[in-house]
Length: 375
Length: 255
Image 1: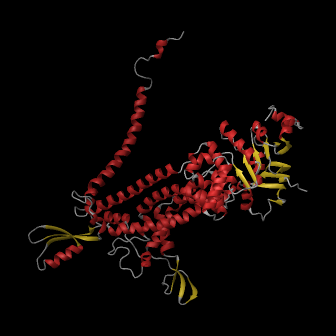
Image 2: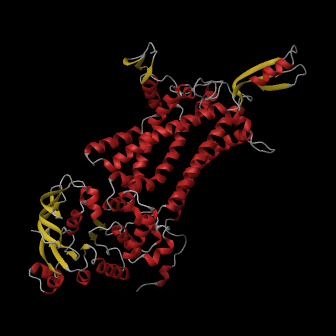
Image 3: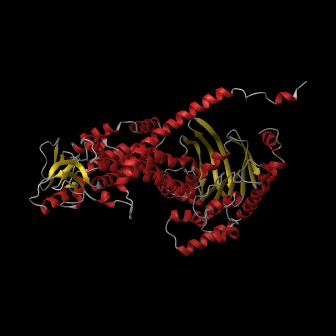
């Protein structure tokens, strides 16, 4: 005979304590990660935000973003007042107070002025590498998903591309150095001594010289593009595959050519996916130090990338400062002190803000476009 | 000698996916301006046969002809020098799962004309209107031509696909189980439409639904295991089948 009283338990539920232990263990590990993130962002926020933001209108210190990087001079004047001046103001001060002695002078490299140079350099590197990576990446993805027959060879190609994504960025840096900096061909009338090979072109004095692009913006862009290519290809191929087969069937059945089908019925619908994944790729490109260390970046540069050039194209063949490399320089090359903190935490804060903005942008874009294109 | 009334002439057609033979020497003449239904159990090759007519099977890796030919206007459509795009403009297709593009209703119907070449705007407007009227959809969508096609009901979307397929005035309309994804109401509407469209077009329809075949087809072909078992006027096939296999299938004892 079934006893209805058995439905009501006496005491705690079965396995109550085990459940509690497992639950707190899993919760504990989760919140441990959150604590680490909070500490990291908290420290940077507390020390970095005051550099960029200020109490009175317009609340943002644009000077930090728009002025050039300079050496900081710290000294006492005759009255014993402590001054902190970037190099340009320092020389102006000296000119104004000629003959007045100053005491206890100390200089801190990179710590004065702003970070306009690194911001501009990173922007140019990102822009250039994304243009290259998107062109090659989307083309390859279209070929792989729309044209290539699914043969073992194509699978091997896809595997090779996936493996490329796992290569450490420093290896890409060295690859870029040996290929783009030292070996790619250029057309010039005056080949360098270390040219690997020169081929005559029979046009005036011009020869094709395999001497590389030196450390330059374009070598850096090419290296970063190589690094990000696998991500772009894989993501683009995925978004191309996500477009329903029915679209392709319908389009072909109505007499469209293969390319018309891709251009009108596949690409427009996979673009949101391609764009969002590219926006995430931008954050990676903007943040990498290793690939540009040997190929494009320079620690100190007086001019902004577009200043002091003979022709606008020279911007491609000149070196640039870059935000992640600048942070590395600030952290590793100069001793930390109360006077360097402003530049150090300020740069990291601006950098994180930039990456966060891009990530947020990609999330918003994805949500918006997904809502528009549903099937 | 092909009679004037034959739209598609199939001669000993054999077809395979890789090494798997799916059609065995199928021969039949599909009459013009009539509805021909292909019936048979799943996997009997009826969809494959239909998809041979506009060579959309080309898309499937490993799919290839192993013998025979398909003639349209006495031209072998598997010739190497066939203009595939023109062939597919002459032979339209409606798929099992309605598949309008994620574009506006107007752009869906105008698609085939736009890929064929530039068309004047007012000419395009006329063609789109006519196609939508022929597909019995005009009255339902005329106020929202530029709204997304995905806002339509399933039945309306399938009729949009029909409008899209007939926008460039094909001679032949292939329908691969056009009602499989639709409710009975929408199905009836499509069948009504098929009866209307056969005045202008040769229609070949694949269906699982035998009642549908009797309701809207003139000719019926029963296929089994890649072979054409019996082909004849629908009334005869259903009321007086000659082949015992056909009889067994239509009376529901197998299949």
